[in-house]
Amino acid sequence: MMIRFATEPRSIDIDLFACALLFGGGVGMSGALVSAELALQPWLLFRTESMCGLMLLVGLGLLMRLDWARRFAAGALLYAVYAQCTRRWMQSDLVQAWLSCVQGYPLREPVWAGDLPALDGVTALWSLLVCAVLLWLTRRLLSSRLRLEFAQAAALAAPASSRRRPRLH
Image 1: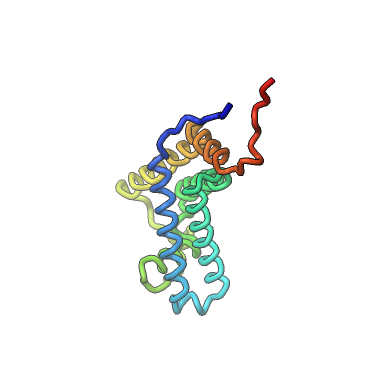
Image 2: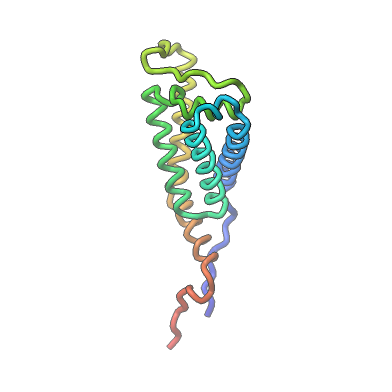
């Protein structure tokens, strides 16, 4: 007797998120390798390359439906919401370095908390919109339907010898 799983289509939003991580990690990594400013700051170059490599790794893990990638992405998105709400997101030197690599602009000095301008209405609305999208994606990553999809992918990827076979008496 063979156990069959219900085959539901893959979640397109998670695949798009994984592709965005792959694109952002790949472009950031290639931009960091050719950045003259980052070459002068080896510690920042190492951190930028590590973040881009992690983005690539998590993107591949999400495409392969690995559970650790789903959990890591959910945790990183929750941290991004926290950082956005406390206004620490865009002032990080690591995010500034990644943005300069992706956009091709020269590296700027990071903005510190005392230097941030007051939020106007459009900026506050934009912040709320970004947080809402990040929270929606986090909730989606932690949903039971997606957990089941990842568990089914893990069960199908396991070698046939390690799968439990039901005993027939």
